[in-house]
Length: 348
Figure 1 (cartoon, rainbow, N blue to C red):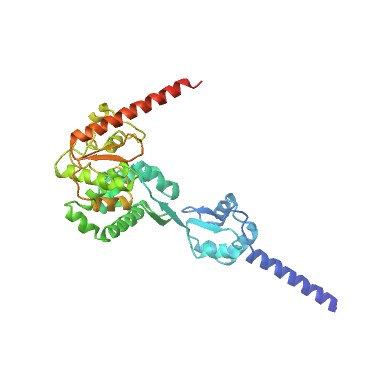
Figure 2: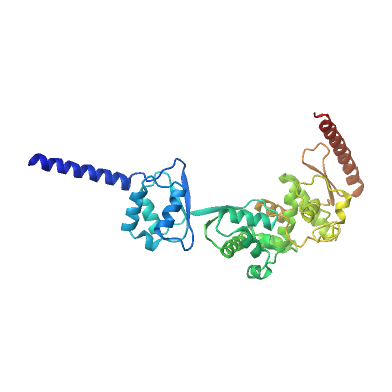
C-alpha cells in the first residue's frame, strides 16, 4: 500500500512540476527579442484573439494559455489594441498582461519629412489609422483649426523627436501630443524672446529654419545662410531659395535649378514671391531652429556652393563677388556633368 501511495505522490509531484513548467516557464515560440499581435475593435473574443496570436506564432503552448485565459477572466477584460510579447514570457505573464490591458507603446520617430503624404505614411505604417483617413484629416482646415494651424502651417506643430503612442491612438490625439510638445519646446531656452527680438513669430522662425535645413548639412554654414535670409527679409529682397523651387515642383531629386523652373507660379517659389513661403518646406531639426534664433549679425546677402564640391559655401555681401564665385561653381559643375556624360557614353 505504501508503494502505491508513494507512486501516486510521485505522479502528483511530476504532474505539478510539468504544470508549473507549462504555466510559469517560457510560453513563447519565437527567437526574436519580441513579437507583436493586434486585437482589433470588436474582435476581443477568444477565437479571434487566439487566431491573431497563432498567425504571429506567439505561443508555444496555445492550449495552456487558452485554459489560463479562461480561468483568469482575460476574455471579459481584454482591450483592443496592439500587444508586445517578449521572448521567454510565461503563459501566466502573457495572460496577466492581456487581463490588465497593458498595451504596447510604439515609437513614432520623426526626423526630416517634407510632405503631408510622408507624415500620413509614417503614421499609418506604425499605428491603426490608415493613410487615406490620415491624409483626409491633414488636408482639412476644419480638423486642424483646433490646433491653431491650417494645412500650409501644419508642420509648424512638429518638433522632430521620438514620441510614444498606443497603436490605436487617433490622429487627433497624435497631433494634440505633438502640439503640446511644440509649445513646451518654444517655452524653453528663451526661444520665444529670441524670436520676438527678431520681430519673428515662432511660425516664421520655423519656416525659415525649414529652408536652412534643406540648404546644407554643415552647421557652420547654416548660421551664415540663416543670416543671409534674415538680411534679405529685412531689405525686402526675394529670398531666392532653391529648396523652395524643389518643394514647389514636388521634385526633391533636382540637383540643378534651371531658369525655366523659376517661372513656377507656386506661392512657394521664392524667386517670384517676396517674403517667406506660406509654410515650412520640411520639418527642421531642433538644432536648426536654434541656429536661426541665434544667427549672427552679418552683411552677407549672397551665397553659392564652393567649386570644390565640398558641400560648403562662399558668402558675399556684394553681387560682383558673388557672381564671380557663382561662375566658378557653374564652370566646375559643367565640367563634372560633361565627364559624367562621357563616362556613361562609354558604358557597353
